[in-house]
Length: 425
Ligand code: C2O
Ligand code: CU
Image (cartoon, rainbow, N blue to C red; front, side, top):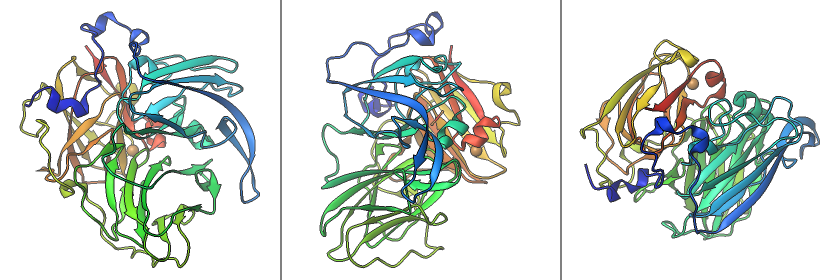
């Protein structure tokens, strides 16, 4: 294993809770910091929205829209979010999906905080340590609340850019009430400004439960980040489908052609279409074009974390249609960890539709797929998408004490019991 510095990508960088047993999650808060403070107010409220296609829809909103406002901050900022629940009877929380933060700010009702009831407030406070593309959503009965609209984007801009771009767009793919197909709240697709020759960073956020195969037509592109974490020396791609699991984010980078548009769209859902630039539309991708594979993409980079390093504990999780190791919900024994330990988790997907397995509070590294070590860029992520038959091993360091969830981000699966805990001893 390498030095602490080499592991910095997976580091939380703060807590000194030597004995997590002595501390409750509520006491694990963000320590004082000197960086800029960015304050936002988010009010959760029921609303009747008029969509841009003229249809009237009931929704649960942040600040009157779904998705709620895009929160943009810079790496190192202290983010303060004042949540007010105006009238969501079932209570609300905000989970900062993919953000490594102290336990008390993770927004899981009944675990890290109480639900915020109508008329009540809660203030979230955390340092945006890792630049990248994130999102937020209520974690109170999340399958219902995310679907009804309690979601939004959180973008942490880097202090120093790894990739250069002229424009930076973030787009949420959403199905409001499991019906209306929306991109950034709009039905019928999204048109984004872009001029010939400009370089575009497009951050795609799948806020829907099912995997979306996204195609990019009209230009070469690179996948520059997965779940907000940059890839090392990404190769050029052309014509591959990108599989984005529920909750996952993929950032792509491309240069606008000298003439015509670039189109980004879902293989299955025609409404999730993003058009950039003017002029002629490009030819669509073949349905059977190859699927992007991150296991040998980009350049390797040593970080001291490898499949054959010594792990303190190893867990095997076998995924069924809506269960883990044949059990469901609180019947699934937690992953137990001690601060500082290195943990390996092996996921094996035996039965059912795809599972985007999501870990709270930590970034992990993907070690192997179907028994083979990754040979390209290291992949750090907060979720791993498994199709039936897939076996993945991941590694993380237990460096963020508290109580954390590990669950499928097909939120229907999570509600049906594909939910377990990572607990610090
Ligand atoms: Cu977006 Cu518990 O997850
Ligand atoms: Cu699932």
